[in-house]
Image (cartoon, rainbow, N blue to C red; front, top):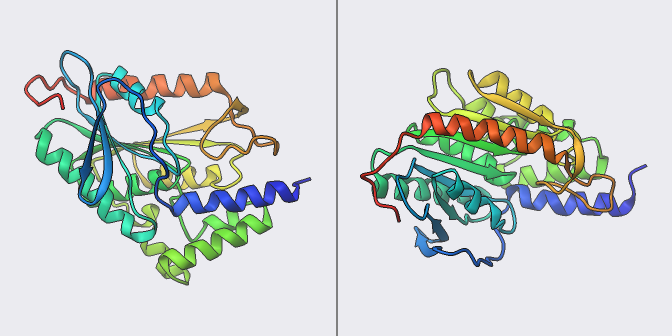
Length: 270
């Protein structure tokens, strides 16, 4: 049975799905702090050698230092940026892409996002056709369908209220803001979609809808496990995903990025 503590935790997590990022604490060597547009940003480049391209990182609430470090280990520079709450966040993620495109020229640009960050990464692919790929983790994709797919009733009601506050009331307003509805045939971005089988907030059905819509996309389903993940709720029975499965899936994504990201010896490292 779902406890009241679980319900409250789930409701609190909904705010991170449409909200911007939280505090910033970093201790990575070679990190460059900057402002892109009106938002805080951080740049981490490979220490030496050719750079395959740039991956934009859009997180849910809070920062995860291992993300940029992993991207650098793959040979890509990582540009992490905050974004404002609600619909204003779109202008911020677009500004981050435009900065990378202007600075790094023709080298490949991809985007990684968790929860609301994954949502904005998918919308960015619609707005900017030169975005080569998106890795979306637990991202809402079909907003009209989302509330009905949430198992827990209080969380479902909270999702409905939050969507109405951000995007407006009615299915038509939500459809206009949904990556699934915005996606058109032959859009160039390659999509890698990661969803936990028992995610209490953004069910895997959201990923399946996007996979059906975007030809050539890849959906990774993550069974339950002990590794904390995007919408983990420690102590609630929803503790995370299977770390071995997730590691394998990221190896698949890394190999795909290696094929996508031709070396860019001429571009600036930072």
